[in-house]
Amino acid sequence: MKKVYVVGLGPGGREYMTEQAACALRESQVLCGYTVYIDLIAPDYPGKRVLTTPMTQETLRCRMALETAAAGETVALVCSGDAGVYGMAGPLLELAPSYPDVEVEVVAGVTAALSGAALLGAPLMHDFAVISLSDLLTPWEQIAGRLRAAAGADFCICLYNVSSRRRAGYLARACSILLETLPESTQCGWVRCIGRQGQQSGLLTLGQLQHFEADMFTTVYVGKSTTHAVGGRMVTPRGYENKRGGGEAR
Image (cartoon, rainbow, N blue to C red; front, side):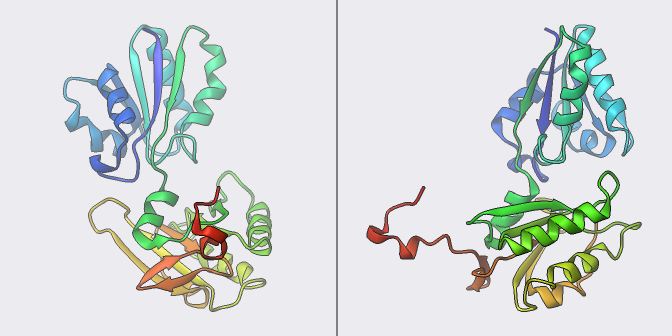
């Protein structure tokens, strides 16, 4: 069978992986991905051939997976979180028309926005936006515009890629933009190393977040006007308490 599964592994350990993802890995003959992610899962799937590339070689990784599948092997191209959220599904599907005999199946995973939100409480109960602060592929001017738009629309905001060695001050820059619209008291939260060793989380205000030292493993949440702390958890009400009869809203 000429097939590539694009598999989102979730945030960390095996317990965060969907059963659909685990099944795709079992069915595949070849595991392909960034070296760190292959090292994470390969021990659980012994006997499978592995293909790896360093970071930033996503296109090469996709071609390797498609060419291997075209040669007759079933391949799992893996990434963290969900394959369709800053993952490998997009670049692989863009290349797939050049390999018309290869079937592609995208396997959903648990993205950091959701797994981190569960650790904090319920910050994403209402409409929310997910914004990456990485300007590697997106100009900072566009990122800044999206931050202003999300703040102005009173979205909850989940921030990915908030820091790296090259972008050490980007979270502070983002907070400065958000503070143009939002008060310093806006409820925020952060989660580090979701589902992995060293997992940490905490609540703070937007004013405090501006001075918070995040790293590349940190996901940040900025609440909307109604988000608040309840018993040490970050909660954004959806409005159930205002709905007559108390039934579930859709």
